[in-house]
Length: 113
Image (cartoon, rainbow, N blue to C red; front, side):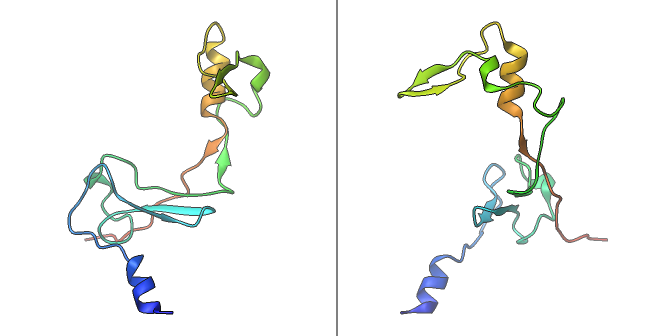
C-alpha cells in the first residue's frame, strides 16, 4: 500500500478564497467548515457561515415537540411521503421543516491583534 499517495489524495489545497464554497471536513458525526487558514479565522470573507456541528448538538426552537408529522399534509414524491406544501397548516409545516436542527457549536480560529 502506498500510504503517501493515499494521504496526498485526501489533502486539500486551497489556492484562493471561494466565498460560496469554503472547505468542509468531517466524518459523519462531527463536521467543520474551514477558511484558508484551516480554521475559522476569517468568517467575513465567506458568504456562507463557517460552522462547527456534531450529531449530539441538536435543538428545537419555539418549543420541543410543538408539532408532529401528523399535523401536515403528506404528498408522495418518488413513492415516498413528504410534507411538500404548507397548505392550510403553515405554522406546523414551517416548524417541522426547521426543527429539530443542528446547533452551531462555535468557531475556532486565530485572533489577530
